[in-house]
Image (cartoon, rainbow, N blue to C red; front, side):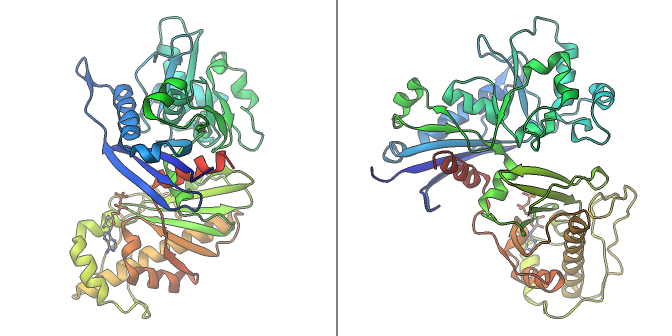
Length: 423
Ligand code: ADP
């Protein structure tokens, strides 16, 4: 055959995006859409809004490209879920969004799960499921739980009840045992849990009606997805252990590919499985949000140019927006430290950038102490990635090669999963 293309779609918090790549990873088409404000009975109807956006994005792809799509995968926000009636395919409740808290379920979940398990957080998928289970009045026999990405993919392949082990982590799935644990399977509601595959696994061919409506090929494959933050990591193609991605956005998040799994609830450190490796992550409250409070983006650019990155700054700060830190220092009472402020703004910014770099370094050091593979190379994503002075400062502090990630869009990572699914 001729050229084939691979479609990735990312459903984020405010909008969705598609990226269409070829087998070499070259982008042929991409587009972003905000979610339409689709209201029903005075409240936001997320289900209709996501569905509309999915099909609008499919329509946005030029006809000649659509005919070449070999496979599709989708990522969604972690712990955004829906409960579906498996006989009709209709939702049994409104969706639970990623950041929604279900404090009513925490004590029940804490009583069944191992100490400090990720499901004990009030925003976990399991807390959402338990909260729904305990409040839903009608028959629940045909209920099935789907994550946002599972549900969107279901609209394309029509096989209800399939998920991936990244999305399923926060409902309690054990990606190491490749099963739900006994403490979860013994619960009355365990029958609603979806079956779980590796991300980027072939599930089925695109449904016939969708295929004809959009002019997709007969063999167009639909593959399991992942969460948005893992898709963003995949985009950087840091595929070997020891490679990592630091995301310098509003906050500082690090994700390191490791041969072994580490989890430590004290620091909010946990691991996602990626085939035969583990993606270890930690997130600090320091980051760009503090910079934004003090400097405009224009100032950041101009002042950074005047900093000599080879020179060490004598200033030692802990830049935070509010009191409290989790990683690499677990201290809910840690106070922001941004003084003394020198007269020169160049010196001030130098001190802040270097302090954030030190926190990043402490983060990688902590992951190693907890048993993860030693970091060897760092790719950077987020707003801070475009600051070359900062990159040089970080190279000096970390003692490692640091560069900007070539690709950082989650949709690109999802497209790589689509490619994986048909290889
Ligand atoms: P978000 O986490 O909100 O998605 P982004 O990845 O878009 O964040 O990054 C935005 C952040 O990047 C802002 O907090 C801003 O302070 C920071 N930023 C923007 N330009 C620069 C720069 N030249 N150097 C360092 N940081 C920058």
